[in-house]
Length: 260
Image (cartoon, rainbow, N blue to C red; front, side, top):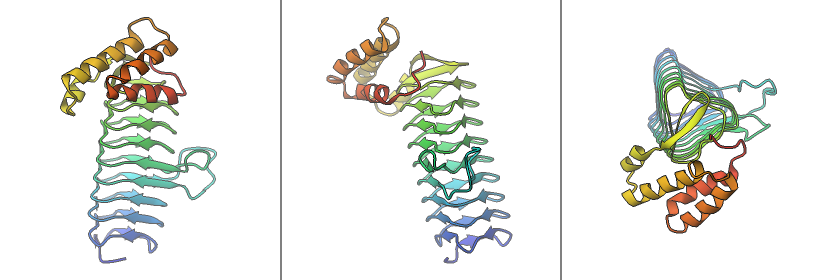
């Protein structure tokens, strides 16, 4: 291990691998089998257990607990993994657990995510890129969250749910089923409330693409079609508007059913 910038009160296990540019704040504990890559900053009073791999240029704020054992009664001290990508902001008091051998073995967070205070990400969750989790959003085990999704504060996601790309949930939403791409969801239990049009504008979607996505939403939710009938209509629409393929691809892998 090279001379990373480690506060004298921090504790770093001899097996941890830290790039020389890593910063570790006061009273933080870096456990065995943890690897932290270049440019990552760890504030004070952070606990990171392994096996955990943390990528480049992350900023992890104080009092977070990362890589702890999964909260799963089947867990029997197997060497499962937490993997965090690059350029993530992880704010105060976040808790991310490792995976389980019964599922993917790995809890994975991608790149460029903005994760606010008190967020919990349970075992075997798979988080994409450019997501935003507002304060106190919580994922049960085995949840997938796709790119550019935004979870409002205190959003709760039931285990095994899938959250599609460009989804946004309102504050206090409780999600028991899958949310297709582009959808705005709110309530307990969460219901669809149109598409995330403002988010799509900010990400450079054209006015025509947004119009076609709205039409796809209506086919799925407003035109009185069964889910199978809607899939057929969406498949035809994606030939003209490729962005609609996110809808069709998502519906083909959904296992819990979608919010309706």
